[in-house]
Image 1 (cartoon, chains in turn cyan, purple):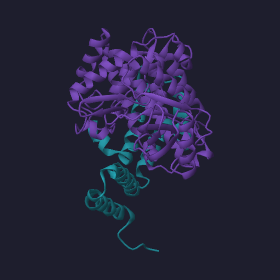
Image 2 (cartoon, helix red, strand yellow):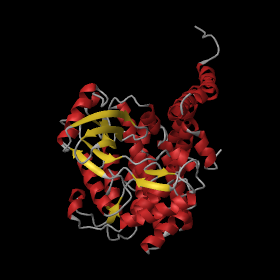
Image 3 (cartoon, helix red, strand yellow):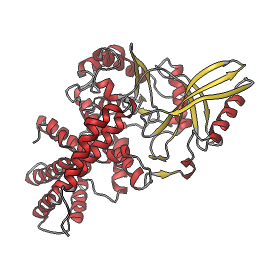
Length: 124
Length: 353
């Protein structure tokens, strides 16, 4: 079945704008924080819909490149365990590879959760 | 898991039976003929505890007349960290007696028999702790003066050193505050089913860069914008003492300056309200101790890691504890912010080495 348009991401975008632009000014100051939270949740959901699996896929691909394949969840556990065991303590290419991997995963998560935070950190 | 579910807490305080029980308790604890509850409502803010405005009319006795209190009690689910209400009340009494700017502690009910959970009352101080408004400069007066004043007040807190009989609740201080924190965070990561590779990365950095231990002082443990009250004249009170502990004074400084507590005003590194120099200046003038930027930086890394762990625990109050809180759920989506901060701070430190 083909859904009628607009899609969920577009609906969330419009609903969020209505909330912030039209409803928020009429609400008491004490509820403004709630409005911000609702708008933030809607924005995260909207970005998740827009990105789909793309960000998770890029993290999975990076993990697979690093380890030469495997289940992404297991590879994340392996990465955490290796760091915990001190396998990446020594300065050198191996440490820098892991650092790059951590950066990639973190940035991708922030692209969904809070892209403004990335921008404020000078990361586009 | 860290989250503790308290089914008895489903009863809210504004339930008529709770109000009646509370009024009877206040009368028993006073020399009044009668006590009426005129107002009782939940105050905004506070994800770990509930704070209620309580206005009571005392008839006769030493409190005769209208009294305004804050009733502080546990939230529906608990983090499994920090002091309980009896412990926090003991700390509050000690710091109030030491002349620290805190609301006057009035009484404690630790048994949970009155409203279904332990609580304490403090005198209500007018003002606001709303971080976004403080950071925006809407309240609290001149922000640099506020930061300087906060630095001074923190130095006064740090003058309290062990042993103190009235602070026995805090236990004996550890010999090395950084190692104690590292051990706590390691326990969390080891106990988690979820991998946190950036947190593991930061923990290794913290292990390899730990500063030499210093004599312990009383640390507030959550000294940050959002946990102090301001009025038009500036600082009115330091709030939320549940994480008080004996520790390294630079931990409070790192926590206050951590990016996660600047509420988006990243360029004002002291709590989002002022440059570091204003806060450091107040602290140094009052304490006579110069803040070492490297030690402060170390504790900022620790702060970001601690914030990450707290965010996971807060999130779990929704995912595991069953709380229906959008605020707590959204805190879970801040984990990646802490991770980015950990990567930035540790990389900058290695670049300097």
